[in-house]
Image (cartoon, rainbow, N blue to C red; front, top):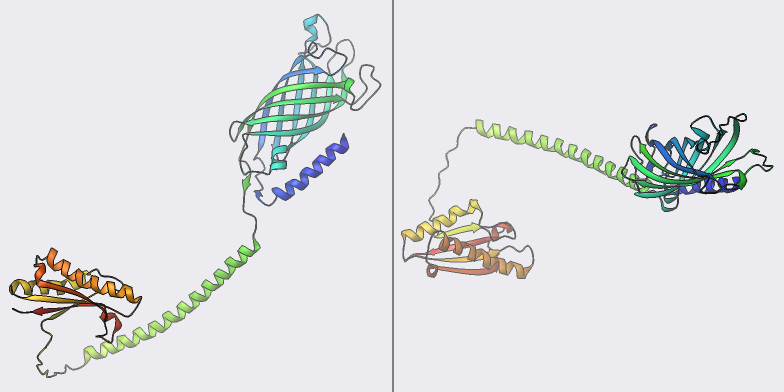
Length: 378
């Protein structure tokens, strides 16, 4: 029996180290301390009628769940005095016998199934203990003996703190008793106990934490070093920009303090006085607010000159896919026409909208994202 218990403890230790040691945070001292109250029956296993000798029993236990697998505690159990019911004088107290001892528990579900970082609704614990047993007698001196006890706890966790359990167990009187010649685990000196219990656990349970990942930490350190390098480069760039800003400020002061220069401007006739430009953003055919005044000028001109017409030619820059740019150029011409027709109520038959594809009019590539609107007078 002792060898079996030692083997079970060794197996549980190895399994706990493999499955929970790296993921469960160590709780505080008074976390997972619990107290429970037992009530049930006890009866000898031999030489007495099993049910005829059954008597009530009660007990109290206090323990602590040390890890998700292992627990330990102290417990007591008292067999109710039923001898006096049969006019016998076996005991002068309310109890015929008592047991007080220490015990250890192994959570079999967490042992073999691994800890799930939370309270299981149901679990089974194996329990073993040893302690002091006592018989209360009047016709002879009280009898003390060394006792051992093993059992199972079928535990239902109502929530994170309250639990109810069914606790069958067998206890042995390890000494000579009542003329028995054998000692140790002798069925003639054993009793079966069936208890129901309710318990309350104090404090917090076990908290799962992510195991240390050396590769992940190394990667994060590399990211930190890269960001530090980028920060140093940004500081250097900021310093260079400050120097440039100071030079520009000096140039601005010089210009503001310079004597005004009168430049004679030769009047040149603008051959594009009937042309207006509507520029667009990259990849877009939407007319932005800053370009709407140009469209408004076209609309005003056409209202003031009822016989006038306008030819709108849409263009795209060379950036991007050619087929897309051809369609985009047409959309830009149509966009100007739509505003003139819908907002300014210009007759559609006075407007000709054409897509010209990729434009090459301007050296500045972004200027080629444009609709060129040419007004034709009556």
